[in-house]
Length: 321
Image 1 (cartoon, rainbow, N blue to C red):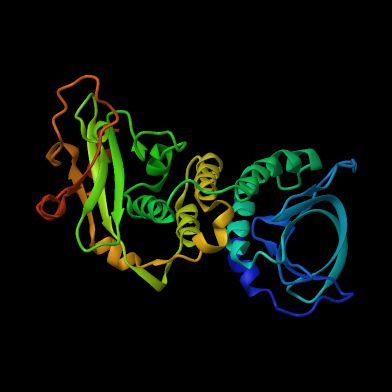
Image 2: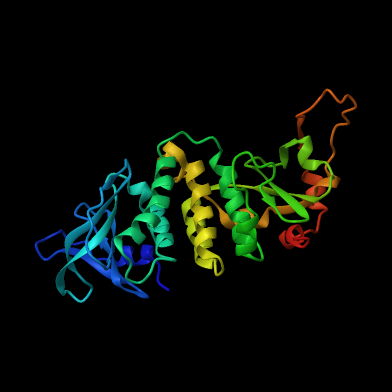
């Protein structure tokens, strides 16, 4: 199915007129449209059924929602008509956020009835409110760490399985966790695989533990985190609503208020794929801590030689799931 991003990109960039907003219908949703706003911004128009009930508009820094607005629409065939919609709009000044907006509004439609009531749309919209609120607070994670985790999901043998295992919060000890195994992602832009570890991450406890090491190289023709996330979303086939919601939540957590800078950072996916290595944690040298009063130990190790001698693949990490 054609994504809302592709529909928006194909809309004619004509100036707004009395004939209405330029819009095209969303496949499988005969009453809903992606439109070009009066200032060139993306707009989602969701038709609704039932009696119209006034609901307070939502106004955030980066997007807005109006319930029951009358819009004049000009479709791809050049025909104009007027109808009432729930109108979800990305702020015109946030060009860097357009792809993020289009990705998250598409997730809103997954479980929404073909012709919902405004209360149905309002419930779904509240999840978007939380995502966009995260873009108003500082980020607490490095963007290249998120890029690496997304890339691992994208290159994994099962996107759904790996999204389900992906961390659910910043306090999680490991980036990925299955029933019987754990995996952490380490990344560097340097020539050697020098990574920082917490001792607890490499200790062999009740679980098989792995480390995926990535070398990254910046490239203006590469992919940013939003582009990677959208590619992943297209490959999710089961439990779509929950997994895609988790995907965009983790992305918005890291983008934060610096989204303009963070979303502009691109890395070369071919270089990353050629320099991805999986290492069993038990092979990583670690300090011996003999005093029980010493805890939360962190250390750096050059695992370049270990990684080059390893033949594990990503599927080995989740094989115990």
